[in-house]
Image (cartoon, rainbow, N blue to C red; front, side, top):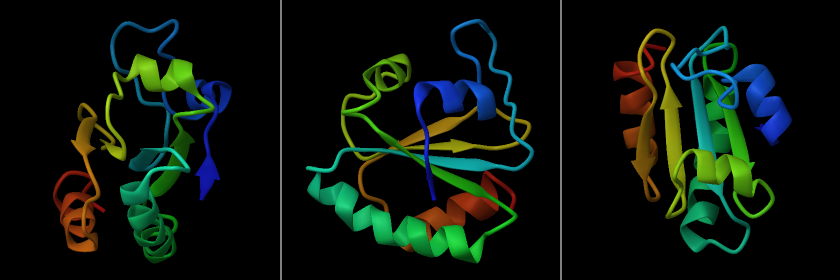
Amino acid sequence: MEHLTNETFIEKIFDYENEKEWKFKGDKPVIIDFYADWCGPCKMVAPILDELSNEYEGKVDIYKIDTEAQHELASAFGIKSIPSILFIPMDEQPQMAMGALPKNAFEETIKELLKA
């Protein structure tokens, strides 16, 4: 599971510095976990995302963004609480979920929203 920086986010996901309208650059749906190392609920989500990244390999890309290291990125997405999970479908607007979701909630969102 890859950790995104501001630069890799702009390269792989969306150039929020230069684009006004959402224009997703990926070739498959994405889940992004905005987290911090000190966050208890984030530590509960991490193994679930590890499992999902193996189960959906080649179908969904899963990334992590350390909000402590990537302040600008967290600020650009209005991250106020963590974990915050950004679901990015191929042809629709991204949707944010707050808090530690159980695995079945991730699976349902992957099926319904991300269509994977």
